[in-house]
Structure formats: C-alpha cells, structure tokens
Image (tube, rainbow, N blue to C red; front, side, top):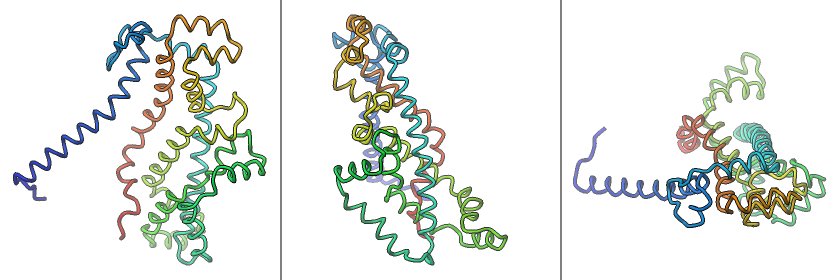
Length: 299
C-alpha cells in the first residue's frame, strides 16, 4: 500500500484529525458533565460550579433513586425485560424472513418485497396504530411494545442483502446431508453470520432501550413503565420530590427537598439509563465494523 506524503495529503490528514477530535470532544463533553453533576454535592450544583469534574463528591442521588425510590429499580428491570425479549423476537423474525426473501425461487417473492418496502416510505400514523393495538387487545401489556415492531424493514433489507452473498455451495452441501431449509439456516447459515446478527441485534436493543413513546401510548400501569418513560416523568416534573409526593411518599419527598437538587436526580437517572448499553457495546464491538458493512459489497 502506497502512502501519499504530498503536502496536500498531509493537510487533508490534519484537517480530518482535527475534525475527529472536535467530534470526540462534542460527544464526550455532555456525558462527562452529566456524570460530574450526578456525583456532586447539592451546594456546588446549585452554585453552578460543576463542570467536568465532580465537586463535593456525593452519592445521595444514586442512593435515593436506587434504594429509596421503589419505582426506578422496577422500571429498570422492565426495560431490561422489554429489551431482551423484544430483541430476541426481532432477531428471529428478521433472520427467518430475510433468509426466505433472499431466495429467488420463493413463490410471490416480488409481492412480499413490495410489501416490505412500502412501510419504509409510508406509515399509517399514530391513531391507526393505536386502534390496531387496541383491537388486538394488547393495550396495557408489554406485547404492545414488541408485536407492532417485530420487523424493521430497513434491517430486513440489509439482512436480505447479506444472505444473498452467502455461499450457495454450503447450503447445497447441507441439503445433500439431509437438512431442510430451516435446518440449513440454523446449522450452517446463522453460525457463519455472527457479525451480521450481532450488529442487527445491537441496533434493535438500542432502539428498545431508548424508546419511551410506545410505552407512553400503550401502557396505563405505572408498575409496568420502562426506565425511559420514568425518566421522562422525572424530567417533566423537575424534581423527584414531586414524583414521590404524587405517589403518596410525602415524608421521603420532604427529606429530598433539603438534601438533593433536581439536576442531581435527573442526571443520576440518566447515568443509570446509559450504563447498560455502555456495558454491552464492548462485547459486540468486534462484530460491529464487519457487521455494518453487510450487504455493501456484491460478490
């Protein structure tokens, strides 16, 4: 590989590096500020002295939301359940459907592909979606957050493109050994498609974890709220004390008004909400670069 050492190339490299550094700073600054505020004392937060480093190290906000507020741990577990189950079901539906649609001999394949593409450009809207979910009797259950979103057309098309590049000889060898189409998918194709499946699973999981609007529409039981919806309520109510008072915990609300600030509670909740994705990503990172390129090259 020949490296261009001309002055114009060096200037371009310098500009690219400067831009990347600025992007990193712009990305990390709000995250570090949120973490610093969540660990700072109420006095320093109120005076605006907290920037990127915690001042007056204080864990009161975390202790409150994790141990004294009974709803946040429950909401956290609700989000974990919705994310894990939803991602698992999404991956099954997406891979099976994509594998079938990648075969040119599939009957009515053109019709099904058209049926997949149309929702990418046209949607029925919120009201028709709610009416469909209500008619199916899913309102108030976690199924309403998963079933209407079983397959993402975009990721389905990406997986179809990936399966089209899969070596046909391996599938033919599996069929000679007696495998059905489903057996070939499970035993041959999927074990060799780890990067693609892991990448799609990561995007599905992030989507479920960050989503709050479907829960806002379809859930009417506070005990079933996911973490993001609870975080929305905390931010809108501005203080956790108001939330606790509305839930009948007036004594704890009075204590919080003197020991915490709205910002510390909000930011501590934000930190708790982003930690799971930060933990999961390193384990999937080795598949990510390869996975995002699936379907981009035609063999």
